[in-house]
Image (cartoon, rainbow, N blue to C red; front, side):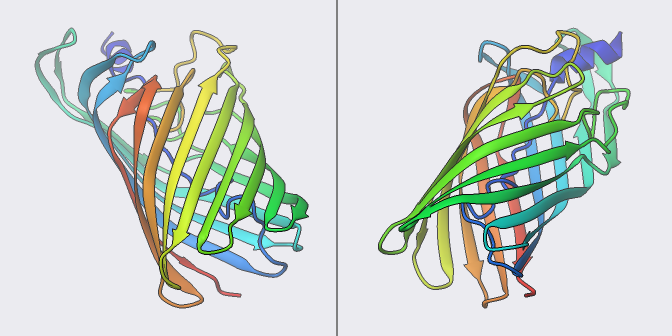
Length: 285
């Protein structure tokens, strides 16, 4: 009974990672060029958006992820990429005293690898300073979805995410890029419509500031029994609009660092809290 109560109380943590299809916006890598990034993201939340959007208090849940991302230009028109969260730690605080029907819970944690994704981006058209491309990525379920308190590091399902991307560079240091997509999920999860937008401004040769918006809407065509555990990317029937700034500083032509924040404007079946991310990248060739 305790397991069910904890799952109902915490249900899902949203973990927003915008390294993946959003990397490079709509633009592909040049032939023979590579990009690698090592990053971390920390989310700590004690509030939750219920179905319908009402925000309620929950026991504090932490999500700590370390991941590596890589992209390589096979040709000027085709880029392959992959994202591997090689270490993920989920924690839920101890409960003492009656809280949402639970009088005592000793707390729990789970550490392991998380699901990874691989994909490709294809440039379809280039017209002036604008580009149109399409991306297809596959979520590979290698994480754990059996932890007793629902602290899953993976969802156990193989999904396919297709996006159509468009980007435009203005005459100056400003660019904009966005996409719309469809995420086909399996194992009882509902399919999703996704959307993304970013605008970047280069203040100096080394400093780039970006504002990002990321959202999804559920089609609610999954099964009611599929919840997705208490943490991670694995909620069923999520909908949200998340946003946040990011700063990228290029130390030289081959190496740089980035840092950013993410929060949600609204949501359903997601936590309410800040996500902090930091990383460094290298362009070896």
